[in-house]
Image (cartoon, rainbow, N blue to C red; front, top):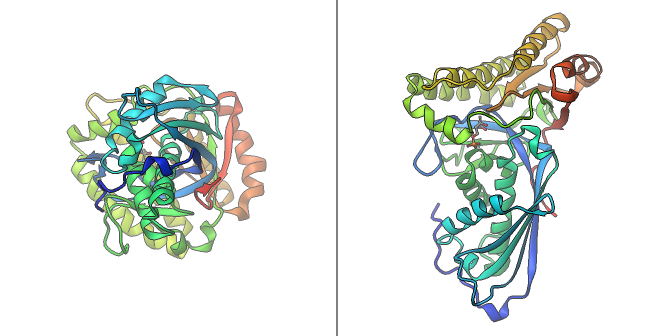
Length: 362
Ligand code: PMV
C-alpha cells in the first residue's frame, strides 16, 4: 500500500476546531508474531482474537496552530486525564514520522486524550489498543478532511497499516472477532503490511469465546517486547521457529473454521510455551514467566483432564495467563477453576474479556 500522499494538505481558513474519538480493543495472538524485519514487518504470519473489555479510548482534538509554534507536529498528550510529557514525546515522534503520510499533521495544533479501560499497571499490553485507536483517529481525520478513504476496504487497510507502524500487533485490533496478519497462502488479500479480517471465517463456537486474563504480576517487565523482537535476530532457533509458526498457521486456520477445539487448544498452548522458550533461548536469556504462571498452567491442564472441559491457556510477552474457553462451560470455569486460580494472581486480579466486535467510533 502506498502511504505517502503529499496532496493531503489543508486549506486552513476552511477548517474549524474539532475532534475525532475512537475506542479500540486489545487482541490476543493465537499464533504469535515474535521477530521482525524492515519497518515493523513480521517474520511469520499470526492470527488473533479481538477482545472487548480491554480497550483504549483516544480523542484527538485539533485547533489552529500558532505561527510561533515551530514544532513539526504540535501536540499535548493527556493520559488518564493528566498531562503526560513522556507519552507526549513518544507520540510526537511517531506522528512526525507520519508527516509524509498525513502532511496535515504539521498544519494544526493537536491535543490527544487517551484512557484505558484497565489499570495502566495491569501488565496488559496496551500498545495494541492504544496504537489502533490512534491510527483509526488519523484515518477518520483524513477521510473527514479529504474524503479519500470511505467505508470499509481502504479505510481499514490504511488504519491497520498505520497501527502496525506504531506497534506491530496493533494492526490486528482494527477488525472484529479475529484477524490474520502476514502473507499466507489461502488467506485472500493477506499481507505483511496490514492485517485482514478473519471474523467471518470463524466457527460459531468462537463467537463470544471467553478470555479471562489472570494477572499474575502487574509489575513492569524486565525485557520489553521491542528488545525481545530484536533478540530473535541472534536466536539460533529463529529460522526453524518461523517455519514452525507458518506450519502451525496452516493447522490452526482450518481448526478455527471447523471449530475443532482440541486441535485449537493444542496449537495455542504449544505456541504460548514456544514464545517463552524462545525468550529462554535468547542471548542473553531471560524469563518473563513467574512461579504463579507455571502453577496456573499446571492446574489448567489437570482441571481439563479431570473435567474433560475445553479450557486452554495462552500467554503474551509477560507473566499473565489468558484462559480461553467457550460459553457452554462458563459456569464451571467462573464458579470453580477461576476462583482457584485467583490465589496465584496479584491481589486476586482478573479481567473478564471475550471475543468482540472490534473498534468503534465514539
Ligand atoms: O506488537 P508488539 O511489538 O508489542 O509484539 C507483540 C508480541 C506478542 O504479543 C508476544 C505476540 C503477538 O503476536 O501479539
